[in-house]
Image (cartoon, rainbow, N blue to C red; front, side):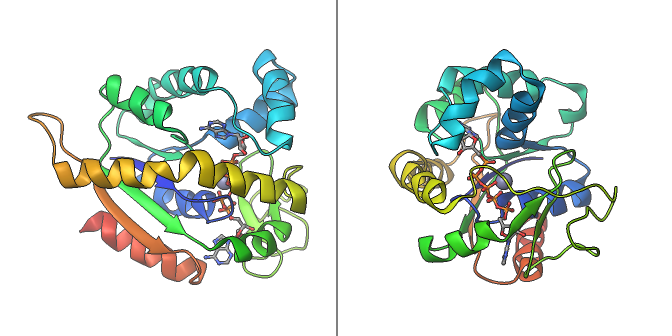
Length: 221
Ligand code: AP5
Ligand code: ZN
């Protein structure tokens, strides 16, 4: 099963991707996590991405498309994957379609802008695994430490208020068009051998567990 998670910064894409990944035993492919790992390694990709990410902009389509194409060709994606944060522009979505990468489900998680700033300022992340916590809504068992490894949690550099606002503007200008793009695809129906994706929208202001139950039941349906 191949799933796209769509939604603004802080909607809960990473949080829900981890539940789906466990349920279906398919990998979460977070382009944001891959770019942060590249920055940490100091690779060429990381050098190109760092300033753009810290300014709340988008890394170039060509770089990202190549990164994702290489990643989904790996053997652990044979039974599918969860695309978290990709595609993020119409050219990225078009590149997937042109490469005949069939999508089974598009899951939109919607949260109004006002709530995003509060959410992201309380987020803590385990850099090694990408596991996400929130100081109030999903606290780790021990303050500041990852539940699985016991390693220290960090705050993302782009979770500063002014950068969050820039990321939200970028979402509305460049990514929200994908809602219409995939809704149209779902309505149009598929071609022979290339089914149209199902499109479902979820209210991401509900509790983490409620959103999880609704997504998992839509995927089973
Ligand atoms: P990326 O890492 O993808 O960031 P993002 O899209 O801004 O999304 P976030 O990771 O901030 O939010 P999320 O929806 O995953 O929410 P989470 O589950 O963590 O990308 C970062 C940057 O990389 C981009 O800005 C761009 O520069 C670059 N980039 C990445 N992909 C790219 C691409 N394809 N093309 C070009 N550039 C790209 O949850 C957030 C917080 O809320 C957590 O604390 C969580 O515990 C809490 N929470 C989650 N759900 C709930 C709930 N239901 N109720 C209460 N709290 C909740
Ligand atoms: Zn994320």
